[in-house]
Length: 67
Image (tube, rainbow, N blue to C red; front, side, top):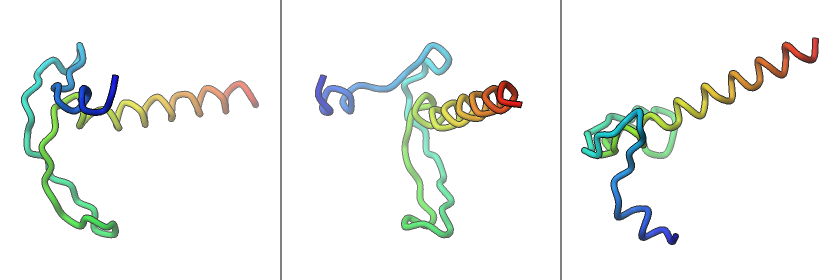
């Protein structure tokens, strides 16, 4: 699959089945973009949160086993 195929289709998951893009506010005071709006599906918007939670859980379980 190439990148055009991925971009041309809406991104959905079982948890976020709605492919409608919504306006999302990004507050990046110290970054390159500053303040801006993006239009993303719920699945795309929430993906970084899920990734962060998985990484935190993994690091906590590793820390608990190494004590």
